[in-house]
Image (cartoon, rainbow, N blue to C red; front, side):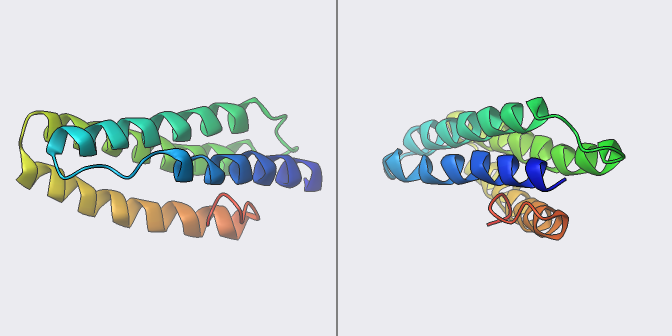
Length: 120
């Protein structure tokens, strides 16, 4: 288990440094959508790497639950980007609120599991 946690936290540590390299979005909906698309891609990459790690014995269900939370965040990010690209700012704001709540839940779950870098 400790090897999985160390590897998982290392993956997330690398992922956490990458958003800083993504320029802050401009004021337009299109710029905000492009920024979101980049964030979603970084998250998808990290999730793919986490899923590729050997699962500790007896942890499949717990990990699937964690990964499902990230899948939800990815979906919400894609939906928000689509709403922004369509110029539907009210829907984008609603999705952003949902994403904020989902992020808090995912971070809490990752922290409780021991993937504290992922939950930061």
